[in-house]
Amino acid sequence: MTMPIDLLDSFGRKHDYLRLSITDNCNFRCLYCMPDEPFKSTSSVELMSSREIFEIARVFVHHYGINKIRITGGEPLVRHDFENIIRQISKLNVNTGVTTNGVLLHKYFDALEECNVKNLNISIDSLDREKFKYITKRDLFQPVWDNIKESIRRGFNVKLNMVVMRGFNDDEIPEFIALSHHYPIELRFIEFMPFTGNSWEKAKVIPVAEMLDLVSQHFTFEKITDQKNDTSRKYRISEESKGVFGLISTMSNAFCAGCNRIRITSDGKMKNCLFGADEFDLLKAFRNEEDLLELIQLGITRKHKEKGGQFSEMGSVKNQSIVNRSMIKIGG
Image 1 (cartoon, one colour):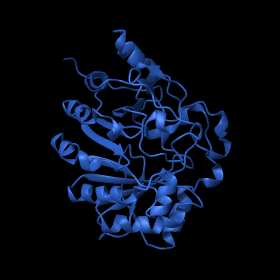
Image 2 (image 1 turned 30 degrees about the horizontal axis):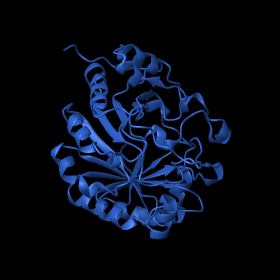
Image 3 (image 1 turned 90 degrees about the vertical axis):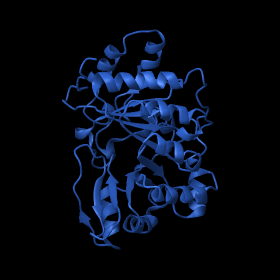
Image 4 (image 1 turned 90 degrees about the horizontal axis):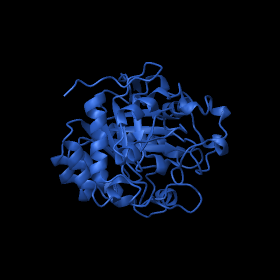
């Protein structure tokens, strides 16, 4: 087997992290992720099969040295062959993680452990049952919280993702911060991002600088070292804290310069940026037995310097003019 080559864009950024969506179906209806209009999931014939997911992922691992794969959705655990997909991906011997809303995790803990999946990103935007129900349209806070605690008990590397929205859940920041002191987790506050149909408003975005100011009103904290490609800037309340908290500043202070991520949607389109309009149909090429390497190289060379080339500063965002998919169609 030939040695893998670096997957470099025109700005010299090396891509070694693949975010792989396996479904755009979800058992939640979160307002920042789902479009306002009636939503229809992709038909099964248009989705990558479990074999196609594995074979396309293998190209990235063997030819480009991808060393980290994150399985996303939609909600990946609603897919009937999720366990088979995880078992296949585990054969690639890369750092594997799953992003989930957590409600079905109890069904798959054993399989995840058997496949050496260490990393779980779990979305939870409120610790208040009624707010949780409002944002997800589902009254399922308790099973999600129970599965979070079980994930911690079993020793998974747990990251909790909270999308912060002004006037809705920003008052819960201190309560979330306390979790990072008492539990061995990384608690991540994420700026509200614009996607097709998600009713994004600039006024709802709380920049990370303001989040830190809110934190400082309740806690003292200290900066800890971030890794090269980290999307979050991490802190902890004290040396006695069991965990850390981080802030993801996609809108107010983007981390595009250190981006190492490639995305594949559940229908097999490669996206070189979360905000990018360009898509490259790997699934069609695979089914037609065409050369994926040429298409992947084309996709990476067309990557923009920042934010898919659609906007730069938050003040310039015009949500209705952004050419993209809804978040659930892209993959988290």
